[in-house]
Image 1 (tube, rainbow, N blue to C red):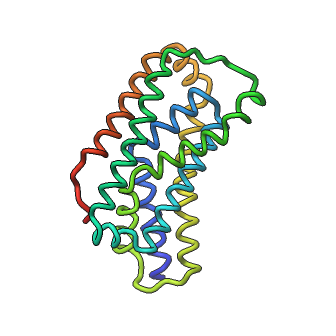
Image 2: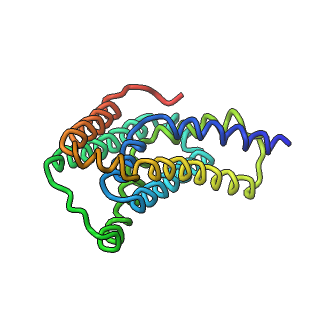
Length: 211
């Protein structure tokens, strides 16, 4: 019963964390609107894999490593923030580039893997989720768990993250959001790129410690 209660509680907390606005949501939304629904789903899977990877690192004790080696956390935040800043600059610079609508087979097969990799790296660019998972695991998990339980936990994290971002992809890749994006691509990309860049700068300059 304690294990089931722990899994249920963690699933709810992970879902709340996933729906919170951030660079992951921004990236999946932009890929879904500007490219295709299939690309958005690829990005959603990338987010799910990244979330499960952080959950696995938390189970292995990464938070304890950050506490004992504070400079490692700072370095990883700086690297992650630099990556987000890079993505933001790329979006900003591409704001004036027109989008040529192509047949699904031609466009989606070429960019689906790129969408997955970009989303995965964006998810992994911020080490804070490892601390987040470490905190909720410490608070909600029983002191002793089996490897089977840990495997189920990682699967749940993957499913929650992937399901949420898949919903985002499905909603924002429909005709109306895409038409609105094509009409205002320049300004939407400038705003999206600016926000992504600012999130990167915030991550680089933040002074919060591991707690």
